Length: 477
Image (tube, rainbow, N blue to C red; front, side):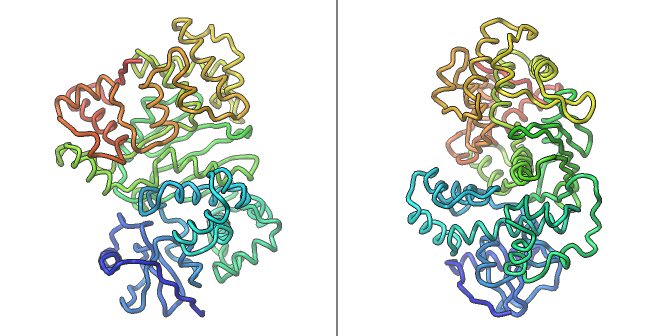
């Protein structure tokens, strides 16, 4: 294979770090960079089990798409398309990060539309993306959907027609051309002996270790809604409604492989990509535990008290997180879950499985009297007004949410942290956070841009002062 080498702009220091990480095969660097082998034309993850090539025969890339743009094809053994994504804080500014997220989304949007959404010109968007990854926005889109299709071919039993439709290709023939162009192979060769089954779409979602599954599991377990969510030692399941489509998913922790065996059932495959991305977000799979731990120590948390592999477990949607926050005001987590369960069982959409529910839509909540909720009428009205902001797939601004009577800074910050999955929210108004910050003096600004994890860390530290398990959250709204 002919390789058109356009090496990314790395310093000698970067290359030395990459070389050490490659030789160590340390899984904590998985997804932060890729190793391209000049003699074979293949690029790999730094954890690839293949024989290590000589240093003079490799080049390093921060993005898989840049390696592909230089003529390298993804390794079939370590599957670099399955590597955990690098943190959005790693080496790119906010606009580039948002642009790459939008360009990776399926169904694809026009580059002009994405530029408009970002409030920049198409020409400037092209300059930003070329500067970040070395290829145009359109090329980036094409490579991203080719890699997603490759993942489905290798890990699911979907037909090529369904995969082409799911990955926004016009036809199976166009899909085959893309796989040939970017992966230097054919769909049939990728699918050979992949051992998939016919039950649901099965995928493997990777993370960068360590990953504190025990913490994430307990967090979800304490807040699980009966009939919508199920949590066991290794599994988390839930039903969902996504853009009008009802579905369900089940993830099972696979510590040995550093990820989650995932099964998704959904009737409309055009939404499969966004559902997968939502699951990744719920489990916080793109987090870099090394940087998070370092930020907590810099903020003043004693090194021996830092929760290793801390992740931010989030809600399915911003709307769901807001409902949970409002119904949980001034009550314990257990009492809050009782109210949310009433809401789901009374207004939630029935899932395909008997006795299973999906979280209710904003329209259902906005139109209901909510008399079944055992709480002051003022809080019911707050919930209804909150739901009205989301009617018609509207995405309200923070000022609109905060303007609601009954919604204060704590509730908005909780929505930012668990709904919007913002990694940099310090819940300073939380009474337990205040208490723990006095017992364990911290400087929140030193934890930026990972202050959400400092909030979680302080909640967890409160458990060491009690025997009640996961913290009962309190606030001043």
